[in-house]
Image (cartoon, rainbow, N blue to C red; front, side, top):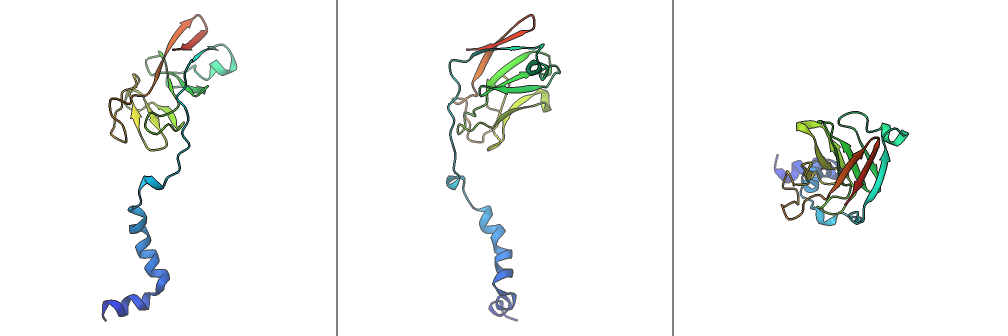
Length: 147
């Protein structure tokens, strides 16, 4: 049986099912619609660690999101705060992952950052586009996050 004849016997549905994964795999991110968010500025807020909100930061590795800022109690028990808005394409997909000592990861494209904001992979990142990190200060049960 010749190739043309074989393809005709398959029909268009089967041909589509066989070729769609190949065509879809070649798509580019340029067609993707991104709703960019501004990186937080003027950040200065407090979290009472004895409150219901603060209780979510009780254990090492816990994090909360407040005002587009990811506030983390890292694996060493220190507080770290980073922009929830990724420096790659300004989407609000940053969260904290506890693997490998703890790092920030963007759910949009997989960009990863150290706890100091340095990019850890090359998904649209370079050292000139670190993740914004905010200062933290603990006074008793009050955690201040600020610039």
